[in-house]
Length: 310
Image 1: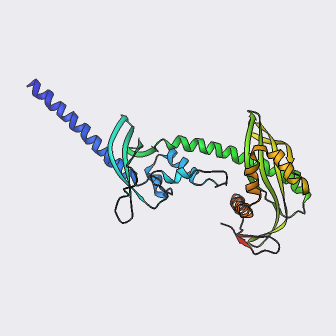
Image 2 (image 1 turned 60 degrees about the vertical axis):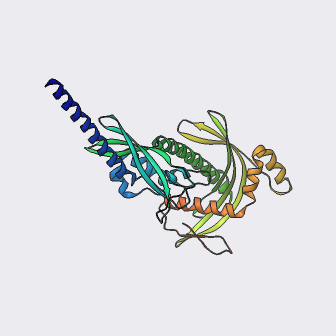
């Protein structure tokens, strides 16, 4: 009788474990529908832990500077080739009462239902946390840590850009014919940290003064100031302590080669490409308008047609 009871209890425990695993696998499969793929769905908020959704939401709304590249964020499980992720949950490990890790296999499927035979089946990890009686997505392939680090780097980079812009407006823009607002265009070439307290920032920098007329910014004045800035890295801020600029006229190329050194080719490729400069200008001007909540849709240089901003 004891042997029978022991067998029965063991069978019940195993059945309970199997039932729990099946429930977790089912939930993991449901959560796969909310793994970001080129966009973060608003309804994902109800299927992710608050902190994971918050960090992803911050990432997906970062300004897309020309020097930034977080393309991996948009392609968690698919590439940029038009395929659709096909998920299979092959196992779930419950690490404690409120945490579990699901192993996910992903195949790339075409919109017509056929599979892409040129890509391998990939294994991914979906992390779940039980909150308020419900299992939620807490991480995916440990991207949460990647996002947190990226956000920290972005905020540092934005603080540096703000310091450079403020310096350009205060020290150089004041000598131009002034308008209602000055928005520099920063084309960052390279950053060299000499030590933990100081860095050298090489860039192709442009000053632009504007007046607003309705929904259009009219260019009042502008000019180029390329060179190398010496930046003091303080605990809570950056301070520009020196700025060596290229000279105008016949000595321009020689001064640029001396100042930019090994970064000269990168600088020259940027500086000589007007299309790149205008694309960066549009992007940064659009960001400025969003940050200052301005009702502006266009900018226009004198003698040129208006350019629509995104």
